[in-house]
Image (cartoon, rainbow over all chains, first blue to last red):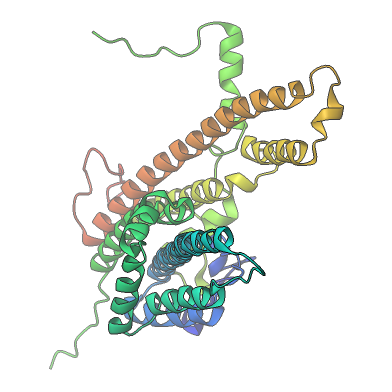
Length: 208
Length: 183
């Protein structure tokens, strides 16, 4: 996806358009493109570049900030997915172990026809409800689901803590952030410097 | 007392060293068309007032230096970001080799590779992979070094450009040796 320039900065330098000066921003599969366009529009309006050079710097700043947002969103998504997966796996392990113990006990005690008395479907339903509660937007529901999970022997806080340390996909995204943020800070400082040192157009007064 | 590196001494060493920068082109002069475009952007020239890059006056000299620095910086940044996709890069070879080894192990085809010692082929590939990872690391660090240099040059050129626009610090030792306005 090339940079979409607003009409005031469209320019053609021989065979080059102004946005050819920056490397092309490749399209990202899964990225919500209109969101980028909207972000670009608002950010450029906020930065208010006046010269073409300021405009190109503003574009770089927008791209860097967008990359930071993408990296943060990706890291959060990985963290959330990883934690959910792990909590679910631990709940399944805990409840099914309990069910298996009960099943084995019944199996040892049966005399005639054996009938499985363990209610596996209720168990699965309980796991699904707990996981759904943990993901709920309602804080009361989330708190109740956390208490449920802890009562079953799975502490979601510890799972999240372990994910923060050990989820390689989360760390892969989050480790990019310091470099991106440093670049954005430096570029932002440079942008302000360029704006401050903008040559002042002297408008001759009428002399009245 | 530490002694600085003196560089290659033998003719053979000098010959090797002289070709170092040709491997990746990061030290090559930037594309003239790009420099020209940056030059006009920095000077904020209108479409009907485009000019060839020149250092005819202090303003244009500062703009030219910044234009060259910008073109170099963006090239270095782009080279680092796209390094893993470069077909000739060691990183690309690492990726291919890594998947090849996984295929060998997954499909069990290593068993047919050498009948006497079926795992020997995999072990050999792993050794090559380790070496390639080291080479890829070196190549990546080299790109980072050039990016760091390009960033520093850009920072200096930008400071000089801003200082010139503010009408200050024109004769700083670290900044441009700008021609005096009267020349």
